[in-house]
Image (cartoon, rainbow, N blue to C red; front, top):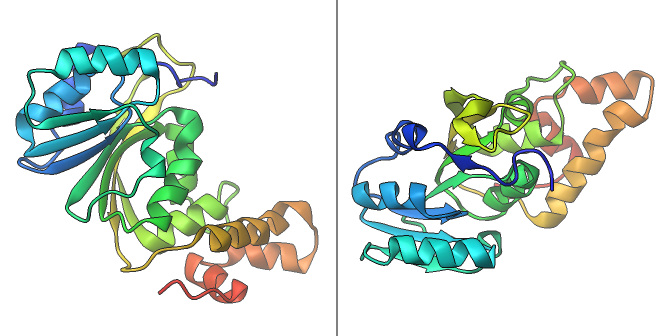
Length: 222
């Protein structure tokens, strides 16, 4: 278990999170938890499909949400599914799943997502070329998406409080294409060179924009 993987948002913070979601939307939620956030989302949404992989929490969520007629709860791994084109993604992600989530939305044609991630991971997503945090996550995120931080979420907003703080972010697709699993692997291998090798090539890779990285690798996602 990694820091922030098992955490529950304190009730006073739920409106601050849910309030950013557009009214009347179709929501695809990754991680129902105990259903408390899902219950609030259901009140402002047209429909909610929510997935909880933990069997115990799934049962708690089902009980809590049984009166919400616009909610479907599944005891499955959401990131093995493909969302509908009409669905907006919402998740208060386990921090250890952040990189997997970026891969998943890159591989699938996810248009919009409202997601809580570890703040350090958000900084990697938005890091510009030439700084230390710039890497494969930065390239994939910035090539496909516009990313906006909505609010910072302090550790005390959760119980139990994780050892790190979080950022609630809005992700919008800016290119009508996807990046395959194999191409994501190629991007990661290419970007590792900036830290695993020395010399001129090392510095040049570090300075390449996301578009230049994609071009240098020779993949054509769009």
